[in-house]
Image (cartoon, rainbow, N blue to C red; front, side):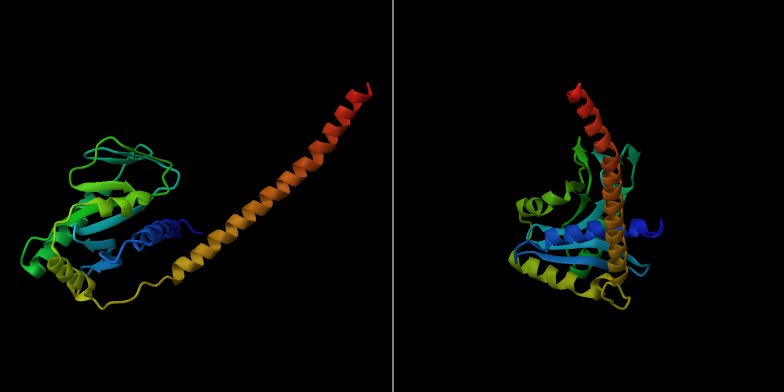
Length: 222
């Protein structure tokens, strides 16, 4: 895998994991993935609608990393990120767009779903963005208080399902062929590494075991 492809690939892995968890929500929820917004190629990883309101979910894959969250900053392995700012912008942009479409204020909340981290330390949750481990996402959504009645939820569901709500660009289904090709490449690479590791272990054992047996044989033989 090239250095150029890797960020895209790991990002797709994170989005697929979160998508699988969101798709397990009950029928009272509407879930959309990779929602294009605007005319500059931007998209929102996941949009969720329920009686608790609208949620824009930004997936972040940080494999084996240490994530620290404070009220105004999110650090990955001690390095500052733009995750909070970007999630806040995404939610605000969506809130303005949907509110203008329905003519009334629509509650939209930004969420960051962390995938693959070794450790997540929440010192203080930001006031306007929820930061969660991906495994907690569905449970967290179900615990949110209702802010919309059934009619409002149904109207918003119809609105977010309409591609014209988000962008004037032609709608295209996501092309997963690039991800599939990269995924097969990664799987093959892992198998090759495992085979080389096994071969190395056999070679080491082939040298060390006879030596050890000879040594202990001499000890026992006196």
